[in-house]
Image (cartoon, rainbow, N blue to C red):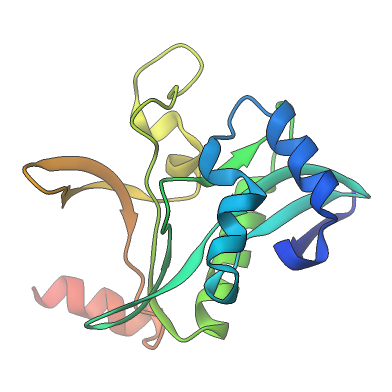
Length: 171
């Protein structure tokens, strides 16, 4: 097993498109045509096992009033994986997300599931989705007229684990 993460710009367009068309977990937001609209801010990547794509993740560096956030832009694309991926893939993906966030001076990583996404194989448990396996927790976000559930992981990357733990304990 040789897992590699390739930036979107380094993946042949035809290969990316073929994966998106064939993968049940991909949405229109995973299409290369949409990623190319905001290519300068895109940190989207493919997950390869040897030379075969086994997953894709669509992310952008978004500049918000408090700082930069690594997350979606055109829609809730996030992580899409083929079936039967290696068992350790979620921990490897999360490590790579943290790396991307640090490299781009992001204060947080945010992902959400598409409202039509099938969650888990046989249950409606949010934590059985890829985002739950990555360690993202469910939170509420304001979407125009109402608060709706969204997977969110806010990670302040400048403090040590001990400082973060102390902050939680003190609050």
